[in-house]
Length: 197
Image 1 (cartoon, rainbow, N blue to C red):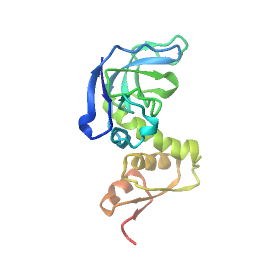
Image 2 (image 1 turned 90 degrees about the horizontal axis):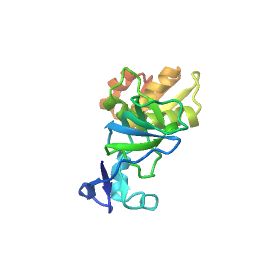
Image 3 (image 1 turned 90 degrees about the vertical axis):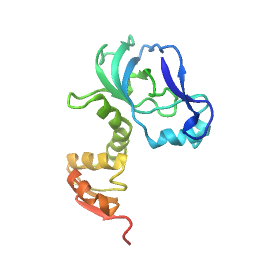
């Protein structure tokens, strides 16, 4: 199988396609044939060496994945071969989703809703889970509360606005003035131009 990896830190040209064997899932893992992945700022940051202490080389790139379950570990109950799934592998473990296949712990995988394509699901994985974790898991946002979401037009921010509104919270966000209308359409109640003193 093919997988994109870095053997040194640097510019985009240090990323190379390597060939290796298809991994085998453990008892609590899934083997997923990837259909889509997406690029996040963390990929460029790792490639550039920003997390050098946590990313020993060689390091496989990619943190968003969507695909089809190819094999299921013996202890996995919620997934079957052929399921459409999306996931974020354990961060900084170097499993990499810029690949033909990926082995992932079943607890990090979800079924793709019928309304999403593989591309849409892969684009949602990391940014969507970051927004959910910030607002729901850690922030414990409730419907009666008001939340301030910085960088509302960013990858995590535009999803966070929608999650907060779906929950019933009041949303205040910061962004450039040119993004105001789209953020209001996404559900923001107040959009503050962060460039306006």
